[in-house]
Length: 500
Image 1: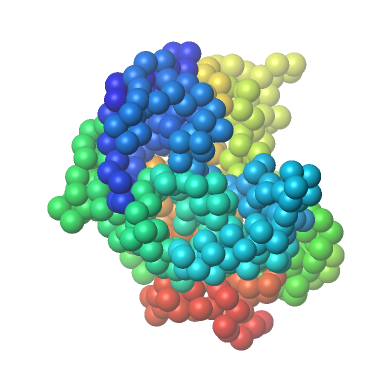
Image 2: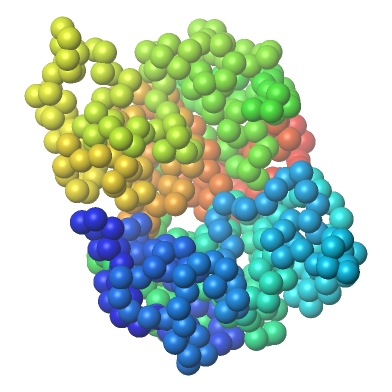
């Protein structure tokens, strides 16, 4: 890709970007949120058209107007959020859009299955074409996504945050597959925020910042600290400094809680845990084992079918979100756009959500704009939200700054209990460092913190105790200082005894 530029209104997402990827290499693409990585990859995959610049494949200049064009040129993309239809089989998902036929009329699933098995053996993917997709683990579903683009003849594979929802064991299995693909001559563009993975799997790294490329380095010649410096422009602390916890009494207790999921299927199946003042309790588990329902029950967004929720000994089972907020529960949701922000409201308005009906923000009829702006100026400065423009639409901020906006609002409540669900998902390394420091600071001020994260390194580095969730229950609670990712990964697959 040479001289690629792309502007959206006043924002220049890509500014004369040059990217060179060699055949048969695993090439990592890293950078802060808003650095231009996703825009560049969407141009390569045909989802966006560049304002200027061009793309060449195998030395030949090409025009990519759509994903169909990209696929015909051997470019495939595995998105962070899987594009699978749960009710269809593996084979049906793989062939969707390019169905093989017999006599030009009938769908030939048998031929498709044979080809899938052949590709699965060639690349060590271990995929059976017969099961329904919703019966597969997250790791197996990801392998199906890879098979989809290999089935269409992809030579260059773009993987966007491919390990975001995987256990350590599934991540290592994926890396075995990627190395096998490299051996077979495939080329892989690997987008991630996890610098440890960059070091483990890539051959070269392109670092982007503010829409441009700031450097290209051989992985063997660099380090996570150097890459972070290139990404952020300053030294980044990977391990948050935290002293020993001084926990007090139980602030939150869940006793044998059961709850249904969105499809009325039981998701919490007798879950019990407690969080004490002045500690961080981490919850580790493969996504889909009840973490979302656990957080929603605590925040008042989902009513349990049985069991009890206690806050400082008071039974608050089934309380509304407003009632939980009034009792001192702050909530950083896992989906900031769906649960945390109103994208069309201003930054200043988002910072007072949940407090907008109280003084000093509520006037007789209208919001007090002076109080709103005073609060916004303080919060944006204290939490380093950029740009510091209270009247800007929240939806126009980068993902990392949107997340800091949510954190600023929730911590501004001086909570008794902070429920932080995936607090650093999809944010850059600078924002990760900042948010993690905020969580430790809350603990040190005596707040009870429940941390739910798919990032095991985050759970290990921040938590004082770790509760492992599997199948809607807590199967083990361990001292964070006495465990590691390997042990947690095993517990996350159910290899542990339920605890009361």
